[in-house]
Length: 164
Image (cartoon, rainbow, N blue to C red; front, side, top):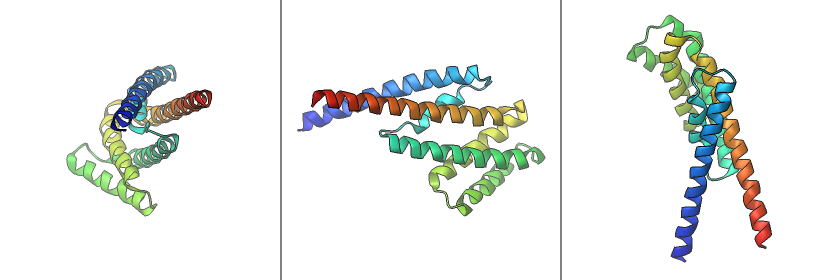
């Protein structure tokens, strides 16, 4: 019994490794194809959103996109009037997270809001197009994660049907 459980866990880890590797490579290349100067953002979304089930992946992907939209909106609308300091970063995160809380989103969305504000606030002052790359690459990453999950679910379902 314990041996079977360990074998299943090992198989699940192996599948996760393959999903992360394939998803990261594919999303990076798609991001570059669509003109990103920050292609690492797409694999970041794959890595952060791919979960053990399709439902969990979709749920986390939606939360990541919502948090990214809120974080980009707050930062792009307000941050240009702020210099880059820790206090200003804290104020932006406070404001952005309270917007998400007011809209009744959970803590996973709050984390995405805070991460997005951090990176967009810092990098937008340097490159002026980071926010666009962040949004596009987040969408690419979560779509790739979902597609990979869908393919894996279909392959596993087919494999189980063949074993019956």
